[in-house]
Structure formats: structure tokens, C-alpha cells
Image 1 (spheres, rainbow, N blue to C red):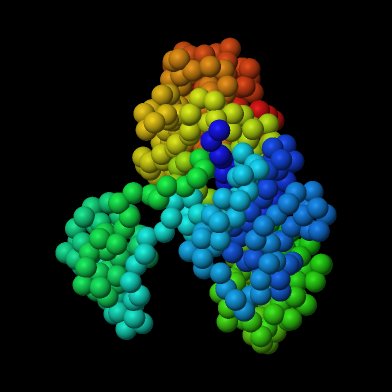
Image 2 (image 1 turned 180 degrees about the vertical axis):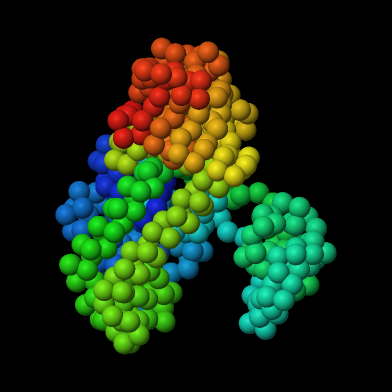
Length: 412
């Protein structure tokens, strides 16, 4: 039987640990943490480490098993985790990886490209190019140094352009020559699940959690970790702001507000990363049934979700969510996403059973990240199915649509 790795992702404060524990108990599966700050014994409150009670409910690995003075790189984590999984899969068909750091998740599931070291002088040289010539200067330089990579990179992302150009200048070779031709073989099938929230609800959770952390002693934890402040794990949200307070650079209320603000900003970046990757199955926070349904779909039918978002105009974008098997698109849903709502414009599901249609529909609804989604069944069809999945009739048509799905009232 194939082995599966359920990868639980999502922004900070979204409830990843709780879902991982529920899945662990349902599947009798061990849990591995990919949160690059939860590895360290000295950090508990500020990294939202699982409580002793939670650790009793489900076996965890890579939790507080080393000192922050001994940082664990993404590559080293992947090697240790693969060796551990080889042992765990002798007794288990499933294991669960709880994401925190996308880099550590990718290192385990896909492997990392190995690049040569880049000197500080070259990094500064590339930074100065960006400062003096802007994005256009980076684009021109990389297009000349590595036209193959330039053709596929996000050309509006200065960080990626600078990284690639620095490697080219440090090595004298194209950046693309260091990239893997194919992903390494892994002894598992990854199944990616992301917890989904409306943005305003997530931000409220973040603010509340920061308040709880302060009440539990985060300031004292930061004070005790001052001697480790130069370690990567402590150059992060929650500690840096309190270090500034302890240095007398700000007052405590300001530091707490900065932790909340910076945590919200970090969550926003995490959401952007996951949306860009496209292969995460979005499920409502705590929805064990939806997560299990997606696992069943992958296991029994070999179908996985993908999503593509394209900016069409200001305050308007298009979203296509597909079910894919062996790189072939089997079905898809299209939505038009506007500032305050989304419109389901197409739902092509010929040949799919009820489970597959439900997974596809709910992936589209949650990936849109809008409080309401409208549907015109004259265009989309499948009226009875949509009604069975949480849509309801509107008293009056909106945007020529007669059905509406509401995030806060719907369920799987």
C-alpha cells in the first residue's frame, strides 16, 4: 500500500495543531513539526508550541528536541525527517507534517536545489543595482546572465531576481544550471491541506492569541532568550519587538501592538504564498470531515486540486480550480473574484462522482476568500447539487445570479 504524508498548512493562528491532532487520532498517524522555531527547547510561548496535553493526545516529533544554539537548517531537517519517516512507515500508512515554514515543508516534500555560497560583496553589488536602476535594472541583468530562468521567474519579484543574479555572478554560471532537473523520489504521496479563514476573522484570532501569549509570560520568555537573540529563530515576530522594548527603544504597549501588526502582515504573506503555489486543498478551520474527504479522493481516485488566480482588472480577478489526475485536468470550476464577493461562472464536472464534485466546489468557494459567492444556474447548471452543498435561493437576483453561498453559514 502507498504511504501518505498529510501536509497541514495555513497562516499563523489558523488552528493547524488542532487539526493535526484530530487527523492523528483518526488515522493513528504520527505528527512531525515543520515549524522551524518549535524545534528549540528555549522557545515555547512565542512559537505556540503544542501544550503537554496536546502532545499527550498525539505523538509529535521535532518538538523542543534541541537547543536554539544548535540551529537546524532546512536541508538537515529534511534528511532527519526522511530517516525518521523510513522507520515510521514500517508501522504506519500515514504520517502528518504540520507546516510553519514553507521552506522546511518544501525541503522534505520536494527537495532543495543546492546553490554555491554568495559573498557579502556580491550581495551588496546586486542590492546597489536595484537601488540605482530599480526593477528594470535587475530584469535586464538577469535576462542577459540567465535567459532560461528569466523566462520563467516572476519578473516583478525583486527578491527572486536579486537572488538569481547574485548566484550567477558568484558562480559564473546560469542560476538555472543549479536547479534540479526533477524532484527527488520520496517514499510517500504528499497530500496538501490548508486551513481557510476569512481574512478579518483570522486577524481577530491573531490579535487574541498575542494577548494570551503576553498573559502566559511571553515577555519573560523573551528576556530569558536575550543571550540567543542573534540566532535565526529569534529574529522573528514576537521576539524582536520585545527585544526592542527590553533595549528601551519602545514602551510595552507599543511593542505588543507591533507584534499584532507584524503577525497579521506575516499571515497575509503566508496566504499569498499558499495561493500562489496552487496545490493546497483549502478546508474550513477544524473541518476534519473535509480533510478526510480530500484524502479519500486522493487515495481512491488519484485526483488532486490545483488553483490558478489571474488579475483581470482593478478589484477583479479570475480563479480556476481544477481536479487533476496524472497531470491531466479532469474537471474545473471558474470564478470571477471581486472586492466583496465572487461569482461562480463555470462548473464542469462530467464523469465525476458526488465526492469529487463536492471537493472541487468547496475548494473553489474557499480559495476565493470572499464572504459570499453567487451562482447563476442557467449558466453553471447543477442547481440541485449546488443547493445540496450550502447554496440557497436569493429573494432577488444579484449579478444575474439566483443562488448564494455564505461563508459563515455554510458547512461541508
